[in-house]
Image (cartoon, rainbow, N blue to C red):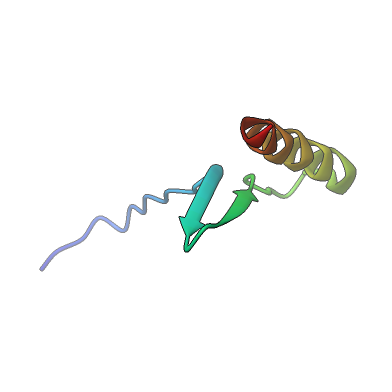
Amino acid sequence: METNEDMRFNIIIRSILNFKNRSEVSAASGVVLDSNSKKEFNENFIKAKSLLELFK
């Protein structure tokens, strides 16, 4: 089999897992070479917070 060495990735940015009456919220981002850790943390916090607000 021949390949052109291209790669494709999929990152789940926001998710809620419900199992046995428990819920788990996850948030992620794509960290790259010039990412700023504080900005990445804040971005993930905002993403997770928007999911948590669904439970209010």
